Length: 142
Image (tube, rainbow, N blue to C red; front, side, top):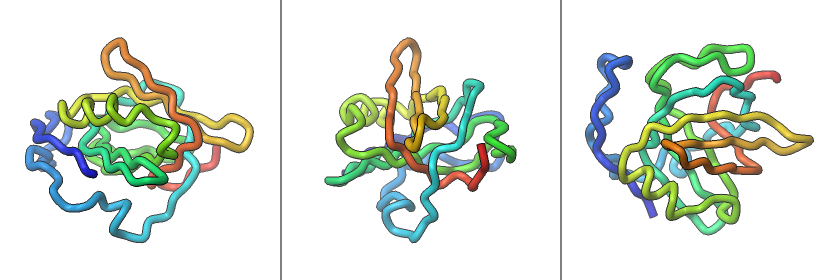
């Protein structure tokens, strides 16, 4: 199942047209991608949730960075598309699906605890803690 919604292009990403809905399967499902542990994101990072694709074993959250952010040892530029994958049992699918339908701007925080990565997504005053996450963001050492 893929959920997507049209959304206005953010002002901080000229030339990026995300108003069209994503109709094809999420890139993370159709391409061979390098999955990595979620790097630490200690300062609120604003991203837009474009689509949610649920499978039996995992849920992929397709996002675009709305502003540049220092993630580990690299800077992720505004307009960067990336995916966060979470085990299917670790997320409230209905909540993130609703956020994707609204093309919500989400605040992302993330880090590691022991051998597992986690991410916290927030929309307004709602927060969701996701454990066991991986991502397609560039490899960084934390």
